[in-house]
Image 1 (cartoon, helix red, strand yellow):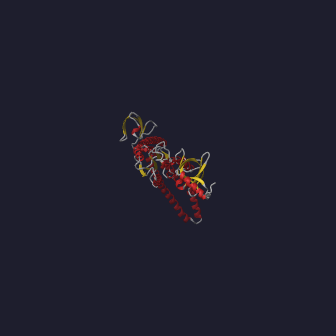
Image 2: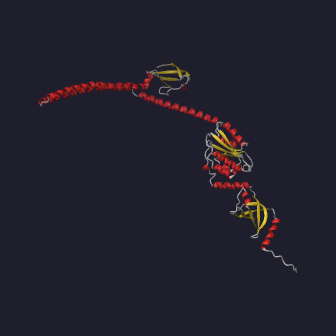
Image 3: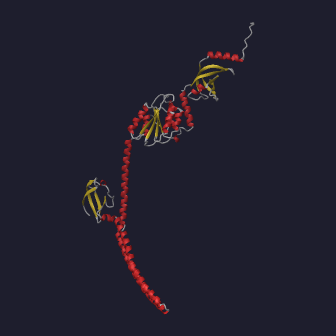
Length: 457
């Protein structure tokens, strides 16, 4: 039996020895497992357990490592970690100090993409109801992309071909690499401070998933969603879908397609305007012809103003005669009564006064009779002036000055343009007195004169 006394260690000494041994033996290990019991305290360090079907081990990702991960850790996520094994002295627990971590079977960027997509979707950033329609004919278009990339060249080429009237303003940015996402967001903000931009194209040409990652950054997605100007996202090729595409008002598969979307074809637009102009002219001509017929029918149904004035003048003369006869009859009936009153006044001693009063009555009667022709003459003059005015405005008076009305047929459309008839057409010409039936032999647009041969009245 050995007489050597045993070496007695304190708990701290034991755990220190174990930690030194384990850290030396397991300085760098790769471990696969499922995350559980995830905790993230205010310090920013992340604590969790790595499990398999039979065992588990503690793990810690310090703040420097945790904040560098492109995705968020969550319970149930299968990961592969690299780190060193150590012992936490206060509890004597073995743990893995993580130096790097990646998801198993799925790329870190893909997990980050899905996590951010789900979070923004819950906030309503991708809601179709908030998307706006693009302007039909924008005056100025802003483009956020690289100055040297093929995307801007393709956009300019397409828009110059389709509609060179639209102005293009470039906001140059880096489209990949460190700091590219912030540059893109700042350029979108700068474009929104311009007063004359109608639409904004944000994008770049094709590339790998990592090259396009700037357009999946949250700062870019929120800048697009908060843009005052409608945004067209054109990132990569048709098969590439980024979060910027989901947040934009319109997603174009390529930069060239974005240019085609925001710019109408000028030639097609001009053809459409010409066609609608022709339709409008035809509609106006039909409307004028319809109203012209209505005016002619009304004019034909109205009596001649001269005849109306003559009848009114005759009526005035008749009333004047009747008025004179009525006044004489009144005077005849009144004169005996005046004589009787005068006799009575004489008997009462008022003869001299009555004689003076009786002298005034014939004077008043005479003044009334003299005033009547002057009143009648003034009224007649006003009536004649009104009649002359009506006669001047009468369509029949216009015809009496040598003008005529040309119709395609009796009661048909009124011809106002030489191009409305063809050579060989028969037309009706209405004069002040009578009508003519004519045959068109020649048309002259410059003078709008129709040369015709008279065929009958």
